Image 1 (cartoon, rainbow, N blue to C red):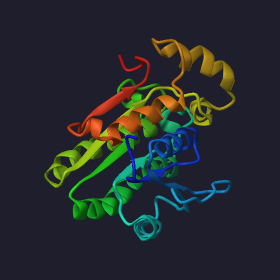
Image 2: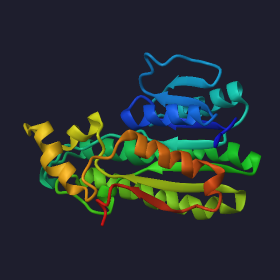
Image 3: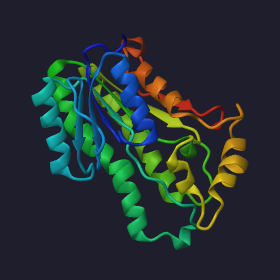
Image 4: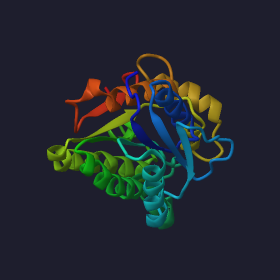
Length: 246
């Protein structure tokens, strides 16, 4: 198994991509701390540790890693999937509160979780971090201004960490999903739009390979990047997008 006996913190664990990633990591032999605001329905086991936490809270983020260390004894990897969408909105209609919320959840949370995870990994002399961004920061869509800015920040931050942490054996990479078949996709539509029609006629048709990205596509890419198969890969941005970024 490709992740056998390694310990990973996975945020956004109850979303479509998060659930599939937790499942795949467990199948590959990992121990997983599954983090989300709401962990109802997630059952603790010897390999799965659900943790309810607000990723924009310094205290909550510190508690996550303290609990993982106490229960599993180490922290081998961090996978940041948690994030929120922006309904398509013209820039003059975006409030400061909307902007700050998107930046807080999609960018500041990465800073907080990475800052907390790195000391554990430095002690071990190795580790891996993968942050989820978005193909929209490569090929923007109209009206997603704040969301795209937050995902651009995620990529730049990740690459800055990759070079900073290379001497410590810690790898940092990014996955850019294309339009994915999850509940979150409908949240990018403008107000009063037909969500299903938008998915079919706009998002699906924007993918050259002709289908929406499935959560398993993202989960499989994360297994690879977190495994020893990717031991020389750091600072990379992997587009899992069916060609949307071309």
